[in-house]
Amino acid sequence: MLVHSELDKLALFCAGAREVTLEAAELCVGDSAEASLEDAAFATAMGDQPSLARALGRIAAEGMNPVPVLRAAARHFQRLHLAASRMAGGASADRAMDALRPPVFFKRKDAFRVQLARWTPQTLADALDALAAAEADCKTTGIPAETVSERALIALASRAGRVGVTR
Image (cartoon, rainbow, N blue to C red; front, side):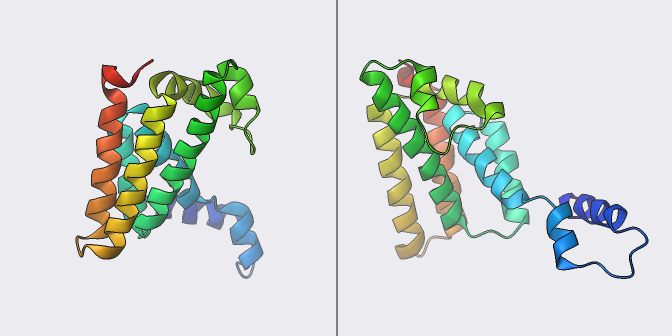
């Protein structure tokens, strides 16, 4: 479905052209894989299991390897950990977020702020450990990597949704 939408957009963009160039395709078609990774990471940290399931479905439809999915989640949790550590040192959530490089995308700031309220530096460190262990399991256990990855992300999303994680 997403592929058809992108192809329709490309056809409209190139209407009347004799051929579709790579440059035209890159200008027209968005990077849905990167968006899906970010959606999965945010849904995991928010504890939003329905959104996580949708993001994981898009990722699977794109045929993406599960290890980059875990790494994208780990990058997100690292940024949360850095901001949460700054908050533990006395910074406000806004100041801690503003110090991140690259900055939090403006459309994601409210969600990031909510996540900062849900996770402590310790629970974020635990999440990072779980993500690293899941990546190692993907590479060493023989269990299908998709299963390992999804199980780890769902477990973290479940943890985010529990009252015990909140400050």
